[in-house]
Amino acid sequence: MRLAPCPLPAAPGCAGGIILFKKVEHFAGKFSFYRVGLTWTSNALEGNSLTESETKVLLEDGLTVGGKPLRDVFEAVNLAKAYEFYVFRIPGSADQ
Image (tube, rainbow, N blue to C red; front, side, top):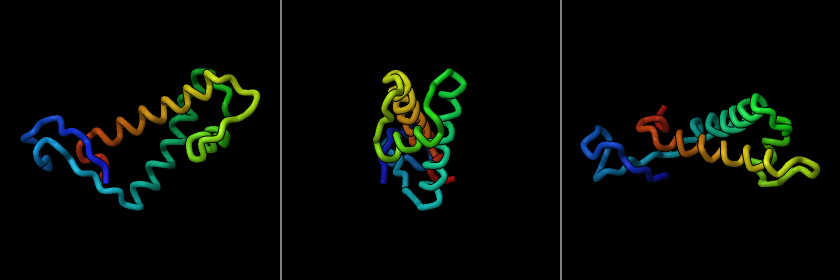
């Protein structure tokens, strides 16, 4: 279960300014799929040299690839963190 600040204390589903997001298997699967796919495609458009499989290994296992620029690794990790922040901060996004 994740806690996120509620944008409006009186918004529906908010209890004391906090929304409780339940991790269900269906959402967790979609989140993981899109986290890797969107990170890789977005970074590829910007010229990142990581392949999709390298991005998947980096994000899921935390292993880096030898011979790749450190900038590319940080781009992928930071974009994945931004995606996670975005997904878990939008009210109701975890329920869909």
